[in-house]
Image 1 (spheres, rainbow, N blue to C red):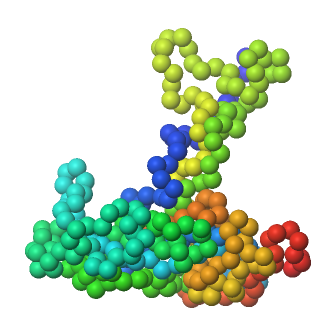
Image 2: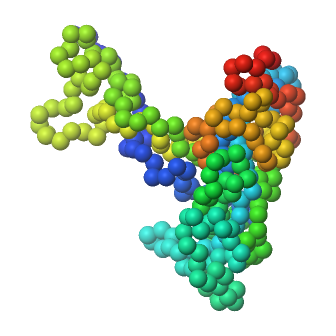
Image 3: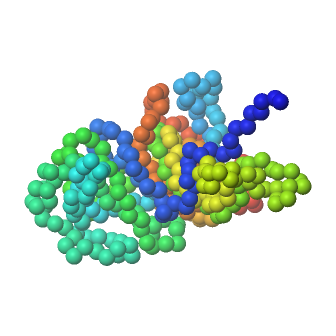
Length: 335
């Protein structure tokens, strides 16, 4: 009998495929860089369009010529630095030593948790504790009121600070505590970033759709879209690699090495006629990311400097010649 070749259906590299704990991603690793800055930002996915730009890829055969490419628009209202948190490295990971909060915090932050009784500790006492700390991070929150989202409750998250000297990190954190920070204060046009988001949820699905298993024979006794065999009688336990039905989508995914094509502060210049589908208009700051990113419209997207950037780096800002603002409603003119 001929030897059959039967590769498995679906990747198990992302297992277990279960629902994410929260609606925005969690960042566990940060790049090592010398520049003192907040290592990331957050925004809300508005939608997609297309642009015309001059091809600047290093090894492209049409370098210097005009090309069309698909892009994603992210609305990025300013974030507020609400606190500083100090960490001590142990054999079991990083543990929190202490934290301090800004004096004047946003009223919307009370929708997430009650305010601390002593918002700002004595800087001298905090500085003494900081001498034993190994790392510090910033506690920031978004301002959805400044976007087109129909919500008021902000998202609270942590961001690392670039640099190697902890004293410089602390001075930077103390200087910006309680202030607003904008996207153009962190990233610049042409920079390569990582995009972290939660994918679109699809609910409980069969193994046929979730894992791409083979469609069984039409006369199969218990259905065609089911798993044909879940394993042997002995051992009695079912292997975790068996493709079974379950949750599909709403998983955290990271897209590496996405390029920022443009950073702007006038949303009307890129809002299409009639607004973005399922999102609306863009009121203020925004960025244009080349390619697609995970998640549906209105979902929060987190950005981080590229943790494994490409070896070849393109110098200079991208040259955009045209940004499509044609209607996405299906009734606009064709451009």
